[in-house]
Length: 170
Image (cartoon, rainbow, N blue to C red; front, side):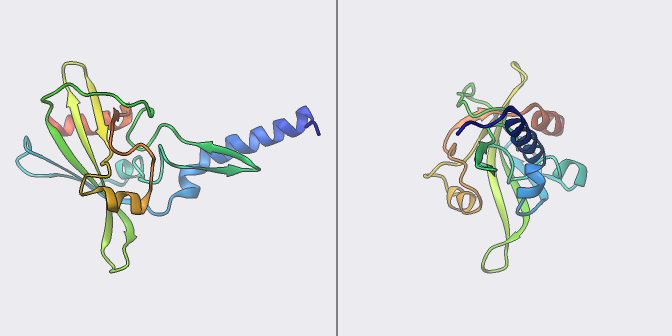
């Protein structure tokens, strides 16, 4: 059975509308606080500005997706990364542990947090994000919240993430 061009157009418009709203529709909770800690910092950086927090929802980006009228989609960018092609950061970059405290609790009533690592190469003006892998202590908690299928590797940081974090680290 062939679909008419009109029915394909309707499905296409519905898919575009859904994908555009997917973060807000699929968000299981919102980010309450972002904490950045690392050896080069005298004390952790704490971000509580709702305008910034709203830009970095754990339930967006790679590993998220859905089905609209039988058509599956999967996000490959967003949250804090620009794509799902692994990269190798230059050796010796300062590493920061970034914790996203979310508005969701575990079975014991404790606030849940999603953890990534961030490195920034000032020479290349390029940031890198690592999603903890199976052998990392944060892996179990992270994948309890969302399994992205990209864990255990480094990825290029999104420009949006770099623009927020880089000035704070200087």
